[in-house]
Amino acid sequence: MRAVEDALGIKIPTNARLIRNIIEAIQYVQDHVVHFYHLHALDWVDITKALEADPEATSQLAQSISDWPKSSADYFKAMQDKIKNYVASGQLGPFGNAYWGHPAYKLPAEANLMAVAHYLEALDWQREVIRAHAILGAKNPHLQTYLVGGMATPIDPNSQAAINADKIAQLLSLFAKAKEFVEKVYLPDVLAVAPFYLEWAGLGEGLGNFLAYGDLPLIDDFDPNNPSHLFFPRGIILNRDLSQVLPLDPQKINEYVTHSWFSYADESAGLHPSAGETTPNYTGPKPPYEFLDTEGKYSWLKSPRYDGKSMEVGPLARMLIAYVSGHERVKYWVDAVLQKLNAPASALFSTLGRVAARCVETIVLAEQLEPWTRELAANIATGDLRIHEGSRWYPETWPAEAMGWGWSEAPRGALGHWIHIKDRKIANYQAIVPSTWNGSPRDANGLPGAYEAALVGTPVADPNQPVEILRTVHSFDPCMACAVHVLDAEGKEITKVIVMD
Image (cartoon, rainbow, N blue to C red; front, side):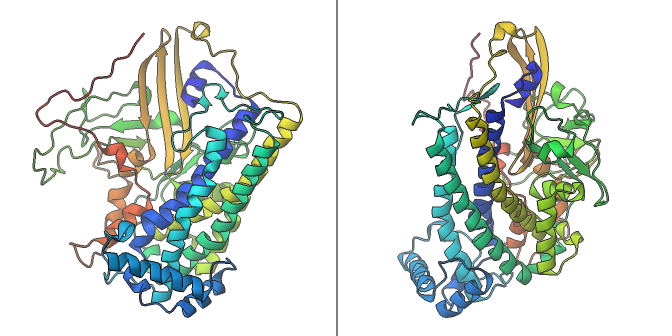
């Protein structure tokens, strides 16, 4: 949306800005909780040890760190019995594929049982709170109500088919439930697990360079380079320097394909995304796909670089930039977590730091959902029902040629879209997604991406069960669908897309 809005000079109404913020914020909250429990927790939690736990001791542990109501001995005994039934049936479901019993697991049995119980609770919780997307976006995932110029979500205090007082009340109820779980389950679990793995505050650092486009505008006519205009500010941090946030210049972004399965005329040089090319050039192994030649091309990801430097994006980048920029709530929660763990700020540059930063970000956004929802209600109460700016919607009003840059902060990190519109058609479109920044292969200068750099020096007890590698890679929350392509080894056409005038 923003790429086209930028190209055509469209400003969206207040209601659309707030609804976009709310949709994005609850997506962060749900996505980060799902990541911690369902995509990352089993790198640290051994389900087999949960079977050995004393439910009474587990209850005492849970009650010592939170007043979450589901913490009785009977509750944990029921959860333990459920896990035993999974094991006895031989149908382990989500627990069927892990390195159980690995020596790298360090949690006591009771902490394992508590974490697994919360894993199962989070499945129900996330399904409930994301109903906010159904209210504001028609469905989840792939919301249906985004439009160039605003949103398609109707606002009418007198209609049950539109955003009205009942819908606002429903949203506030969902967001209260989201905030309660984050504060009373997610945060305490992170703080309970982290002390057993403090060595990971010194592992998995990687680059020391961080980039965020910033997001969640606080005013309608905002300047993205003004930290007070965005809830999450824009900027870069270089070489672990937490004394300053440097301004971000999007013209300094280039993509390389030296080690990517794409081709440029000059593969020693990068291309700015506005002039980017995506020409597949697969030179990798043929079936049975045993080995990659990492001295040549070895990835479907390009290598984005900022001013020639590899950058990390994501929750850690956002929280560091917000922290140094003076974001009040980020500073409060980062300092509180560091104090609780008795760790210096430098501990954030690590695998464990990414886990902590993601949790801090979740709390900060869970706190903000109610204020934005009440701001939306207050704006509607003034009689402002506008949801879309339609004056430049019709293509006949567009210029003959226009260029636009759309930026946002997805849960995984900086997301950029570049569009070239010519004669009312898309002449070129390029995107750099967060996992392209973090998962990129080496560039023309041999610089690795964040994943590769973060894995250097990681101790691995058993190469056949590399849970340590998973811990660091999963700490980035990779979306490798971004790097998976359907390929016919014989060169046969699989799909054709026809663009109609």
